[in-house]
Each structure stands twice: as C-alpha cells, then as structure tokens.
Image (cartoon, rainbow over all chains, first blue to last red; front, side, top):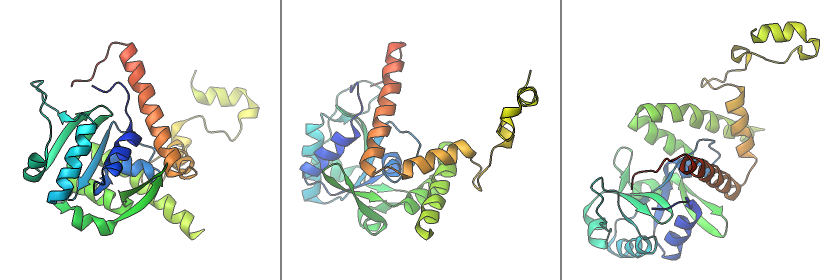
Length: 165
Length: 73
C-alpha cells in the first residue's frame, strides 16, 4: 500500500508508456482550480488493443492490483482491460480508478472533444473540461456529487468572470 | 458571550463580519471563505495546483497514520 499519494507520478508513468487517456474526476478538477481534495486518480482510457497493452505495462510499473476486500493481489492485464469496464486499483502511488466510460456511458472517443491538454510539470496531460466534469457529477447525483457541484459550478462561474474581465 | 458582544465592545471591529450569516453567500450557496479559496487556486498554474493538493492530502494521511488510522488495502 502506498504511504504517500503521488498523483504526478501516476501521470508520468501513463505518459511515459504512451497510454491514451483522459484525466477525469477530482484531480482533473483540481488542475482546473477546484479547491476540493481527493485521494485517487481517475482516468478514462481508449479501449484499443494497442492501448490496453500500453496501459497494462504502465499499471505494472505502478505495481497495480485490484482493490479486493478479500485481500487477494490480483493484477490488471491487457485481457482484463479489454473485457472489463471498471478497474479500481491500488498502486505504489495510491488509488487509481481506470475506467472505460464515465457519466452517461461516455467513452474516450466521446470525451476527447470535451477535453483540453494542460501542461503539468514536464507533461502534457489531456484533462476532461470542467463543464463535462460538472455534467458527469450531475448524472451521478450521489450526495457527494451534489456537494462537489456547489464548488465546481462556482469555479466555472469564476473562470467565466475572469475571461470576460 | 457571543460574537455580537465582541463587536459591541471593540470599536475597531466595526464592519468586520463576526457571524457566518454576515458572510457573502454566492449564487451556488458558498460563503466568502469558499469563494476566496477558489479565487486563490485560480492564481496558480496547474502544476502548482496539483502540488498543493498532493501536499495537503499527504499531510492529512501522515496525521491519520500518526493517530493509528490505516486505510483498507
């Protein structure tokens, strides 16, 4: 189990292995100015044969294994990445959720036009835009999403205010 | 003694909010402190935002561990 969360290292390993992914969820919101905290990295990946291989290699470097209440150490691989949609993983950099879709069944190909590339340290990271993060939280509509929406809607309003100044 | 008593006895505090219900509330229901946090984050670069968030949560995790809390694996 990771004793320290390394969001930056997760992004670095995925990028170094040429994984096609879009950062979604809390870390994506943080990069765009959200003051809310999170303890995991959520990504949506392109479900292609080649990308599944790259992603499996990256997850191997991160020593990923499935979150398992029974305590087994089951590792993700290209076959599992091809057949399953949701992969909730523990890694040596903390929790990483690897998803085929987010929100209302939105896959990588649906989300790529709703994303932007941000520079994070030396990396160029594709990040889901704030409007779509808000839409996914509205769709999920859990109590924690409703709470986060208060901040994310205000953040979007502040960004729009700055853009018109 | 509540905060209104503070204000009544200290003229220098005139105009400074001392109750939550005096704080500006945004259209989304956040108060002044929440909106200030967002405005401060927007002054940072994405790299700085990530580092701040990571440092913060790692501090929380360290304090939890010092007090005996371990997250399930």
